[in-house]
Length: 483
Image (cartoon, rainbow, N blue to C red; front, side, top):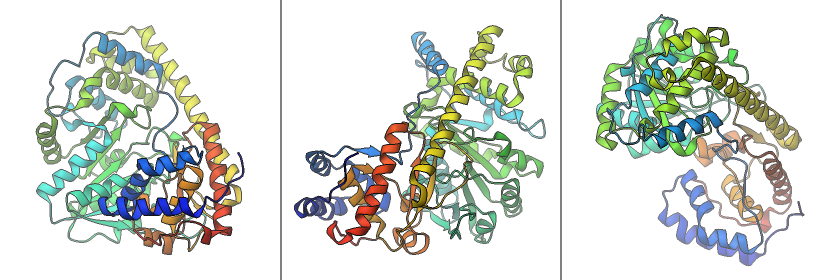
């Protein structure tokens, strides 16, 4: 990579004029919205291109790894036969898909409690599930308060603002290595008489941390006692390096009779690398919630688009069920799935080969992510002040040394227009820029699911820009904005 150079003043003035006169007046003044508007602005992109600068990403929410070939084949086969694509379905989604999901999700409960297909709703990705839950709360609990473990996926804050719901972000006390963004006591001490929903992601996004059994138990006990719903976002649940470390919220809820206080959201964008298909689902034993979500789904789209991929959902549910139970119990799993046409129509040898092929794919995927995580820590080296253990795959967030007191918005914009590097920093995931800058310092999300060579190049760009910026801060664009 060639040495970075500070662009000329004329270049900075043009970018600043676009931001202040065009982007800020026409965009919701929320950090992530402004960031996206800058990264996609055609005039700014042309200015960058004219400088001969290439655009790169180190924080994207999309993996560069391909999906499992067996899943693609299943989709193609279904499309060729016009299966699932020429029908309307119940508002909760195709019954075959919901049957398959209920069988899979039931395995971990071991008959302590059980799901039925009626406990599931297919959605347009996990984002569809999240927004429908917020719509439910707007309709039935509009004056209530929602507590969220932060930092977290930005959509939760967007949804709360859109539906004009009160969202309380729980502030973590994180100052040194070993501290955590996720502590149940930080959530519990903020519960009050108006609290009706608690939101957590497990594994946490963007940190990749895992909730412990005690974390979840403490939250669910209070939720049951005070009649609060707990939303657990499990989008990354399958991407845990050591599956024995992962604690299922419904297993814990079932052990204390709190299943009515739990709703789980899942999707296929991260664990299956199938972002564009918009496949998601939510499930809960809370009948009031599920029936309300079903009505919302019917009002929105008549049926969930995820129903179109019933063959894929059924096949994946079978494979994940074998994974959960072990290969030695595959005959029992096949027997349990005999009511599912996608599985019933495949021979034993086909299913065995499918499972083995998937495991080979998945093991190589986790190995790739594991090595990429190690490489990012090595590449950044002393530039990292605080990082989290390698618990779950895809992305993590790290605190960068030497940037305390720096305006994070200005740093992010200057990094982009000088190097072409897109980053997602702390304020993208909750709290205001002011809180991050004053209390937490500079944090950046790193997606180690990206192409290794491009990711490494992006990290090197980031390191070099940081050095250049700190030595020549007065020579760069200065907005002093605090969003």
